[in-house]
Length: 229
Ligand code: IYR
Image 1 (cartoon, rainbow, N blue to C red):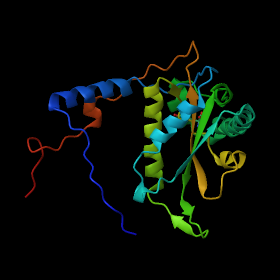
Image 2 (image 1 turned 90 degrees about the vertical axis):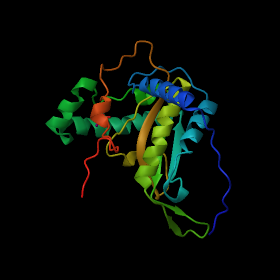
Image 3 (image 1 turned 90 degrees about the horizontal axis):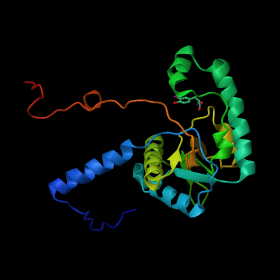
Image 4 (image 1 turned 120 degrees about the vertical axis):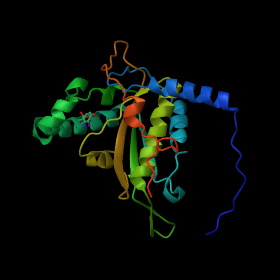
């Protein structure tokens, strides 16, 4: 199928305005923190819809958008998810995780108990789709599914923070129970579970530092690259 091409002219800013916008954005995203203590204060579904639609703008392999976002506020479903997640996490913390892994997690004070799965007003469960089914029920392959869904989740977390809410990137493992509880079709696999809401009034976060630019950027410019040949 050939696609029609249309013009695309993004807004261009003078360089100083561009630098300022970049710095504002850095300041904003640098203020995002993963939170484990949520308030039960309600969040309107309309807001969740808009945040998810932002996530769904992410680039994806061959523009297949290989994702489904399940937005759960039903207390019965949240309870079922909590119970199933805690069952798996209990096993993780009592033998399935290595000592090194448990040591690495100690600063974050996590354990097998996941009360936030019932307290947060919304759970967004992101599913990846290895393939889609066309009208005739034939499998249509998706591409770079992990990369695509990972990008969409990054946009989602950024949109949640931009709106003034908090989230937790939760990875109960294994996650098959989510497919069962939410009755998802065979082509969908749970990717991330993201509680969303307001922070609990007393919420605290671990005092962590982010890596510096020297630790995360390697420059290869004409003034510093080693030349070959
Ligand atoms: N899935 C477990 C363990 C866990 C693993 C990592 I890596 C974290 O950054 C945090 C927790 C849990 O959710 O507790």
